[in-house]
Image (tube, rainbow, N blue to C red):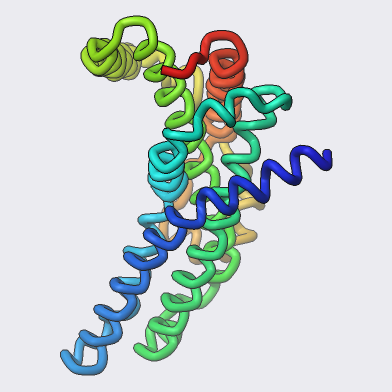
Length: 258
């Protein structure tokens, strides 16, 4: 555990540049929103830019890890020769990204909440709508998608690196072909109804909706026509575990410096 903590601290140091770059972009958008709100007399400028910033965090880990591996390219041999197993190395990278994402997301949420309070939009929330509970669920979903994206990036990057050491520059064409084929197959499976059969099962019970929305408001919004399926999360979790396992296997067995 001590070795992993040291690795985690190292990942925080390596990832600090990516964190600062992303934070700089975030602060630039915040300043723009404040300028439009104060000088441009745009009542919803802070709220709108805040929601935009929060939405961008769906891609935070993907972008963070991309910057991270570019920075670490020249010291990749040191990372590969680390005595810890591949899954532990990848976990340290993901954990470092999640820490940076949490700080960035906290800033974006406070900024957005302030914008809604200043604009008076919080006074227009329909009665029976538990806004903070919905916000907590949305943040959970945001982390879920961001981690999914981060794990997917690690698999793509490791697969590309393994191909690069074997086929050289042709790895780019091979990777584009594989990704295109994957998108094509997913599209075909979706059209055939396979993905629906696999994922659209176990709808959330009505009491779960009432936790976020009152019964009267749920009927008014007709939430029953927009079911949330537990199957989506179960299948996504299985895919993430498979991707993570494949990434660890590639790192342990196939990865070479080149």
